[in-house]
Length: 304
Picture 1 (cartoon, one colour):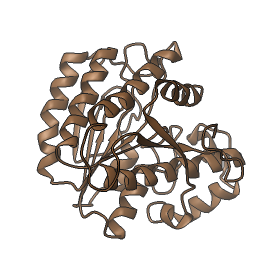
Picture 2 (spheres, one colour):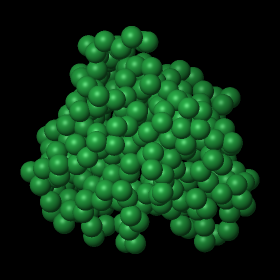
Picture 3 (cartoon, helix red, strand yellow):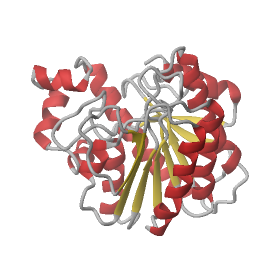
């Protein structure tokens, strides 16, 4: 959890970003994707012990508020992207949450929730998910399976969690210790297939747990390789389609290495987008949604 306030402080110190407290996602928005019985049990603290263990978090009212803010931040970032070309949230990317349960530190699937809301209200007709976290986006793949309007893409380590993989529309599995050259070749190869889908919006799950210093990653990417990865994805989107950046995973030792990589993703977006000409909003500063701990204690600059 330390990485979240550290990242916000790093980006604030660097300048160029406007930080907005993330709104809490509405229950109705969540239940378009998740089982209402599961949503009710989580919100009211009545999940059984085995469901809590699968989540990996102890239940608390603070976890409820933060989970709703995490999903709400991605929804808000999607609206920013449609208006400005780019939107980002300093949380989200909870891609292991399924219809009726959460897992792997993921309670609700913010990306699926945001996409479902955009399509249902007619804001977009087609969407794509580019998931470059080291772990497969299994919950996202399962929740959006059969949705011909949505393309799901996951590049991940084949030997890592989840050990039972789901079927994304495009899965690229990498072996242990795969480095920059192999990874970037696969990213370059998959991007034309993403844009052949003609999405109206792209969700970029930008987890940085592929770093070689990551305790849970099993890949061997360098910080420079991560930068090139971000440049490939964001440059491709910049000339074609709005993009939403969600944070995803990162568990490096030391944790500062994870913060370096996450900050680099957002600073790459700033560099690529701050001079762009979008008709509906100023391109600089960029808007970043922050998950707020409580609707009563939100402040603009210290929501943590």
